[in-house]
Image 1 (cartoon, rainbow, N blue to C red):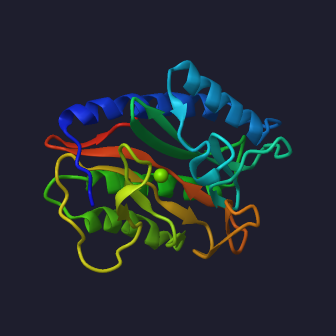
Image 2: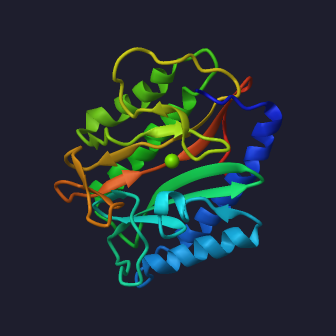
Length: 249
Ligand code: MG
């Protein structure tokens, strides 16, 4: 069941979302050669606690850390490690949830370390653009599938693989609320969007095959062909004045 939020609740949701955006902006600056994914996790957690927030993912269904860090062919849900050192040419997906005053913000981006290939740069650019095209459709009166269609139609002309097993979601007091938001059109138009709906939109797009598998750690999702993947996510409220991106600084 969809949990619609009042304008007041959306105001409250701004706080975790803004903390999330601030923290990821800091983590992003640390995505440089020689840093470990564990270092990034520490920074994310410390900066969040400093702001009075709590890292939502820590302990969520047993996830061991605060930040999801997914390197190169890792799609999402990578576990930070002291042994994983970032190198020039890597791309790093950083995905982070913040809880504050009972509400949650969810935000992700994929960051190049130093110089990455033109091919990968374009993958990042197109994936981020698909997110913004999806956000643009998060309007009262539209249907859920309008968001999915905007994302899919941005990606498809480039021949990239859209991950089908994972998707965006409603968000609020819980990290994952109804409705699921597919990054492709399946069937039907889905529910009509109404003011008060808050969604985490998050296209996951692979340079090669759309096929994925999960590593033995039970979390890390990787591309089957080991080609790189990109992931961008914003928490967005449908309001009477149009889409409001809560995780934008
Ligand atoms: Mg999410």
